[in-house]
View (cartoon, rainbow, N blue to C red):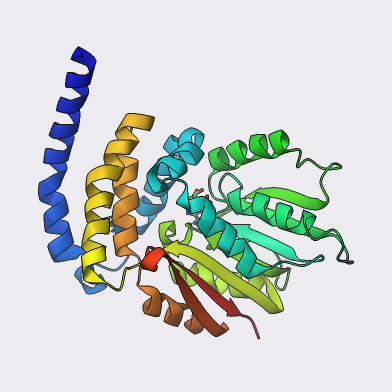
Length: 296
Ligand SMILES: C[S@@+](CC[C@H](N)C(=O)[O-])C[C@H]1O[C@@H](n2cnc3c(N)ncnc32)[C@H](O)[C@@H]1O
């Protein structure tokens, strides 16, 4: 009983402490103008920071949450992220001989769905497929490798070649025209220079290759957006505190979602990088969106 009272007090204090800044941020800064920043500065959630500092801070976030990352995805989304990721893979519809680069692949959720999808295509003839899971954070990849072993996706016993590479999406060492598919799920908003990520995606794809991004987005309906904001800002950091003992990474998570460009703006950014036939599809009223484009 004493434990529950203490917990309740903690939540009340934390919620109270966050309400002021969050409300101010939502009203004045939800679409913070880049012109408010000095050259070399960017957003880390609602904070304005130097660009190198953002990269460091994002790294710290995922280092802190890596072990509980998968659990928290289920808790925060009530398991819905699994449906979004399944839809993402169905839209990609890989075939044998697909060479996928899964950028910001973290603990392997997209890669494992890709392997499963291809395994279910057993009757289709074709060469060997591969997936390169690439992430800037070795801790996230390490959790992914353990999961891969548990699932039996190890060299020799898996029909798809799987490779784990620690690298920054903004400067890749893969040669031009290496992959025929590039996915990035819930990763791009964490990158400091989205334009550089898109340029690199374009460079490493073969002509005809497909870029696909699954990312949180903006709800076109303002009432739904309000409800979603209440849940995001008032509940998600509390869940972080309860399940991981960490408030700040989850506050960053919700702030970073609000800072990410809306569906149309992001579509233009993908086109600016050179991709053609760029389209997007909203999932769950626009809570997130799948963008797709081709290097033609
Ligand atoms: C929210 S997780 C998404 C993981 C996985 N794609 C999923 O859907 O579960 C975001 C990932 O982006 C990675 N990340 C952040 N900045 C990156 C960068 N510049 N280059 C590559 N990965 C990056 C983080 O380390 C983290 O693993």
